[in-house]
Image (cartoon, rainbow, N blue to C red; front, side, top):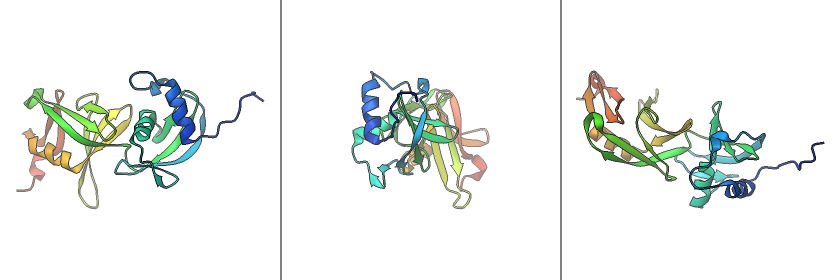
Length: 192
C-alpha cells in the first residue's frame, strides 16, 4: 500500500487543484503528466458549451478554468492538474473561434482569432487554418489550431468574413496570415 488516499475525480476537486497550482499566465499543462484517474461525465458540445452529468456548466469562469487545463493526447481529451488527469468527451473540438481581427493586407496580413473562452491565436505556421468538407452536405468546416493539439472551429459569421477578405493565389482562393497562404477552396470550384 502506498499510503496515498485514492483520488476520485470531481469537477470541484479539479477546480481546487488548478486554483492552488495556478500562477500568472496559462498553466503549464504540457509539463504535467500525472496518473490517469478515470473519466468524468463532462461533455464539450460542438457549439463549445460544457456540461457535467448532462447539466450545462453556466459559470463562464469555471468553463474558462477547465479549458485552461485541457490537454489532448492520442486523440483523447483530458483535464490535467499536477496531481490528476481525467478523461472528458469533446464532440468536435473544444473551442469555437467567435471573431478575428485583421491587421495589414496581402502577404503581410495577420489574422488574430479569439475563442469563446478568450484564447487568441494568430493564424500562421504555428497556428494553421484548415478546412474540412463534409462528404454528405459538402459544407466547409474551418478550424484553427489554438494551442498544443487543441483546435477551435471557426464560427459561421467569422468564416463568411474570411471569404470576404480572401483572394486568389495560383489555383487557390484563400487568405494570407503570418506569411502563410491558407487554402479555402480551389479557384475552379468557386460558384459563378
